[in-house]
Image (cartoon, rainbow, N blue to C red; front, top):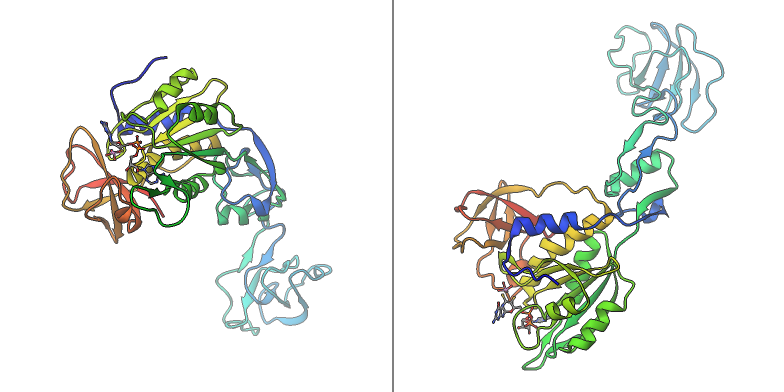
Length: 382
Ligand SMILES: Nc1nc2c(c(=O)[nH]1)N[C@H]1C(S)=C(S)[C@@H](COP(=O)(O)OP(=O)(O)OC[C@H]3O[C@@H](n4cnc5c(N)ncnc54)[C@H](O)[C@@H]3O)O[C@H]1N2
Ligand code: MOO
């Protein structure tokens, strides 16, 4: 199999990962379970929104010009007013109640003058279908179900929602020195990836289906990649040039198609993306924790967005201020905090330490030619 030896530019890696996968098949889930999922089909209004002319304020629905005589009361959800209001008639009405035919306006209690002397300037009536007509397209496929989308789906009358299946991720953490729990002894490190990758996978619409902690062993790694139903296998560590770094050789043995082998960025150079025969994906994260985080936003999350069919907005761009030395042609990803109209670099970030990233709101993408104060793309962490 072909080995892609030279590192690809960071932006190219991002694009390759985002375009690599086609969306997984759709499934229908109850509306309450749809938040965070990605719509697989367009959503249409099941009825006019609103379904009838409705009061926008509590007060009096009036017909003709004043003075008005109050002839009854209409409540939201109560029986509609029988018949039409005649000129000079009014009904007390509550916000959301159906406005009787013949009514021309709703006078809010606070300003209502039933003598008609002051008249009215605003009708305070929400017209039937003014938000949408039955059958109108409200949402397009690819839209992530946000809390507001969930509310709109309910307004549209949806009970089950067509969403993309959530990509299942197997997390394979490698390293003889890595321990899964407790305080590490000298020579050991506590695994950072189980909690960090799980959260990043969830944020990108996937789910970590299982986790495996492996010693540095090529045979065991190959078994973990070959025998799984997961859509994506994330392998941490094992990505560099050391005697125990088996990932690339194992990928070749399994006949994988390697899309990205190394990326021209700091940190996170030894990150990789490959396709296994049969359609599963492998993302290799460098073992250094901050480098691994950079690889998650560069390769793993864009791959998951492709698998969910999510139409994500472009990264926000903001002026970034900080004392940073670039190392062109490598793109630098630095932790930054949002500070109003700009972002400030959290100093002292190192590949093996998450201390800077843990204080950050985003990773800023600093490319060749950037100077302090120039705009940069932000990969949001919060
Ligand atoms: N001769 C070379 N050496 C290295 C290169 C290189 O190009 N040539 N690249 C360096 C860079 S850059 C990185 S990043 C690391 C990547 O290493 P691996 O992905 O092979 O990972 P390991 O060697 O297993 O570990 C590196 C480092 O990270 C710690 N680690 C590993 N797994 C975890 C975990 N689950 N939780 C916390 N920390 C972890 C591990 O103890 C090591 O300290 O390679 C450089 N070397
Ligand atoms: O780039 Mo490594 O990924 O220095 O930490």
